[in-house]
Amino acid sequence: MAKTEKKTVRFVDTTLRDAHQSLWATRMRTKDILGILEAVDDAGFYAIECWGGATFDVCMRFLREDPWERLRQIKAVCKKTPLQMLLRGQNCLGYKHYPDDVLDRCVAKMCENGMDIFRCFDALNDVRNLEAAIKAVKKYGGHAQGTICYTFSPVHTVANYVKFAKEQVQLGIDSLAIKDMAGILTPSAARELVTGLKKALPDLPIEVHSHMTSGMAPAMYMAAVEAGAGAIDCAVATLSGFSSQPAHGTMHAIFEGLGYETGIKTDRITEIDNYFKALKPERALQANADAEAVDVQVLLHHIPGGMISNTRSQLAQQDALDRLPEVLEELPRVRKDMGYPPLVTPTSQIMGVQAVLNVLGGERYGMVSNETKQYVKGYYGRSPAPVDKALEKKILAGEKKITCRPADLLEPGLPQAAKELDPKLIQTEEDILSYCMFPAVALDYFQWRAKPEGERDPIPADSEMTIAKAAAKAEEAKAAPAPAPLGADDAKFAVIGKQFVALFGSLGGNIKVDASALAAVPTTDAAAAPAAEAAPAAAAAPKKTLNATLTGTFYRSDAPGKPNMVEEGASVKAGDPVCVLEAMKLFNPVKAPENCKIIRFLVQPGENVSKGSPIAEIE
Ligand code: CO
Image 1 (tube, rainbow, N blue to C red):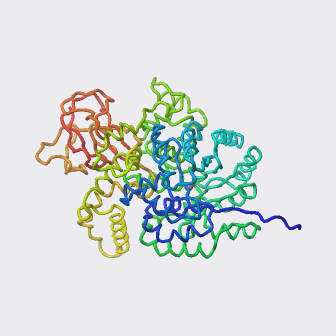
Image 2: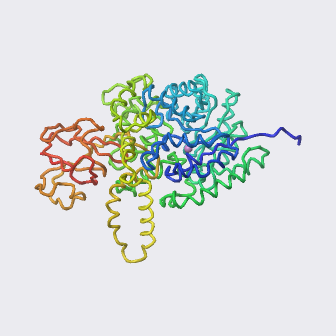
Image 3: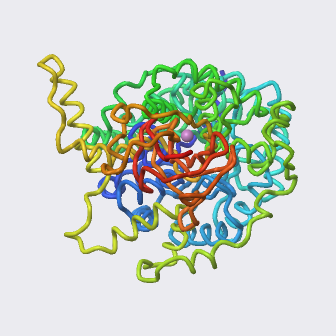
């Protein structure tokens, strides 16, 4: 055989972003990164993926770190390798559409603080949701990487994907990522897709991203690269496999054997891997040990890597973990009803929670999340196929769909944010942007940061680890007589229980659910209510109560700073929203089950209530 020119494939390292998001619940600290960063920078990667929505959220929420400071510190070390991040199109780093002014300032600051490559994606592959993001990246001198969020369905074809890629080229993208967030892209489909893209857009560099969930990723990478993709996403061995990326070492061996140059330094990869291997016991939470090495079911339910464990913990919190198989069966039906959206933030959460509600609620779409409704109305963009007509009619209930770019309906966000924030809490302009992304989380972090060091609460991620270890110990001691209750830790459990919901996934706030199925039942035995202590002790047992159908946190308004939805003593009509329960990381408006008077609320805002416990006395 004639000697051919050496072929190349470049590796993008995801260890510092997707890999620990997928396996360590995003709990890698900045100091962990800095401890090995010089080696990462020198390992010969095409890029280092190190930033994105989940890392941003978790930095403040669980690690009590400033995500912008993390970026600056990483940039200060990385002199050889470009930094890469995941930008959720109009959703920026969050879970909803942000106004263009906020997105523009965020991208400006990301560039200024050292970000180089921006992988811009939209969950619905709606190019209108990418316009402002790509425009901003180009404006501030970044590398704009467009994205195809990959899924398969009767309406997803190579021709459609090529059309979508061309639309992004029109916006000025420098490269394109095929984002297989659930690990469901088969080698043959990858070959077909890359071949189609290369034929239509021969000069557009293509990078492929996948997860090991179904086990196909290495074979898929091979097929994609042979068809013309130039880069693949991998992680070090310790943080590879399961729902994370394939390992650099595996892919290096495969491609070396095929005559490719990868440019990576294998001794450096080993050095990085040893470092994280030593760190793993301190960072990987015990629950990950339950994960299956390979989950072929993903080919049916399409739940992305970071989401499956989240669904599991949501169900556990609702005391319904045994319903998981039903939820996984329901999800493809929801996806079909909704026009086959790819499942990735935020559609994965919207469809996942709707499937949970369909199963737990007993009647399909008996409970409809506000997000599902917004989705049907077009506020997330165009669904790949039309939503089921009958369902659309039911959910819209006479309301109109929008047809414009959703962000066109948003008022500028920066002036309002600057007005709302206490200047004493703000140190940089970046703080204002953090607040725009995650108001409650950022505020909580700013207040924590403002305290003298000795007076701050423990870092949530540290407390979690203590609890996870105690739980593991209790598990070990199971053979012994009934393990003693954790005592003082119980209180900690209550406080941190809510955070556990997010512990195993990348889901953040801002999604609202209409969980209106509240039971108005006479409470004859107050002591039987699981959250009986929530009711004021001196109060007489109420005759008739609204009971929580979900375990969650009680609030009287549907957003911070908003007035109460209903005052005590007010009369409400059946179906009127009365209060909200934050459950499954979502705000669930609670509606009156009948025409009634709200005598008084039995719980305080911010209090946790159990499923079935009374939250208000009514008559
Ligand atoms: Co991923």
